[in-house]
Image 1 (cartoon, rainbow, N blue to C red):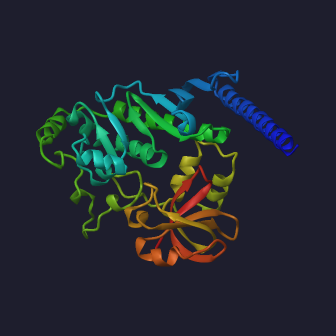
Image 2 (image 1 turned 45 degrees about the horizontal axis):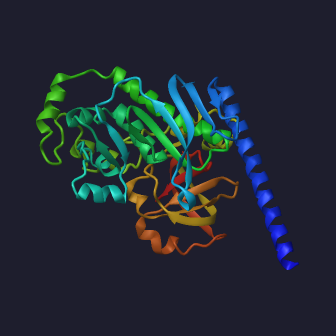
Image 3 (image 1 turned 120 degrees about the vertical axis):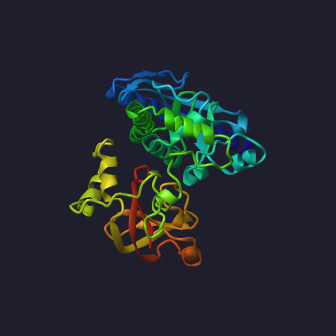
Length: 367
């Protein structure tokens, strides 16, 4: 009798899991279809027997969003891939990814990693290509390098085979996430193509780069050097700023920017994703002091933060007005910050680093 009851409960739970999974899969497809219809894109995958996919022209860029499944059994994982294609030819064989621990090992044993001569770029990216001169020339165009650094650093994106790709774990079941990632990958392609269209082809610059191509860790002629990033007093500007803009110090924020009003707009889900980057750009560098209630303390990992704080920890929580914040501290304060517990009050003072749209959170670099 006990065995029969146990079996019945098992069957009931299994049926409920199946029903819930089917309901969730249908809702995900409805959200994908709504997103596709909103931007006049093609949607496929209405049937539960096929995976959903979106394709078409998005913001003037050829975009495809689909589900990719890797592995089998317990090692089976699903990913949502956002792929935007370049119309402008890139250097042959170009592949750009973030440089992780495995990449450093591969490089140590002789794997290709083109050094472009900009320290922060070389530290953050693993770069491959058939023509090293062309690759260096490409990334010494700041209007190209900045969106590349943002795509790879902020979204763990990849540029390869004439495409820019973002891959997220699991099914994207939120229209805001679909739009945010589609915006990110499409804007990267659009910005890079615009930069290449505006770029004058200088034979003398290419020749100078060719002459330097064989030198180990050489700085290509005419390229920005570590010295060129320093002010007259010798302080390094761009390489210590933490922005994905690696060629220039952050511009001073406009004096007429109302920080509270800007944050209200960024927290408003109705604010356009085209408008958000401009608002966020205008508050970058603004001073912010106050207190926060700590929710958790995490390692600092974002490439959008400066190297000064990137090896330390970040306290995540909310300010008294409900504003979600992440405050990143230098490693020297680890002993203090790591002892913080959920619910602790923390006073801080620093400058706005960027607005994290994924978590709807303001990131601040503490003094």
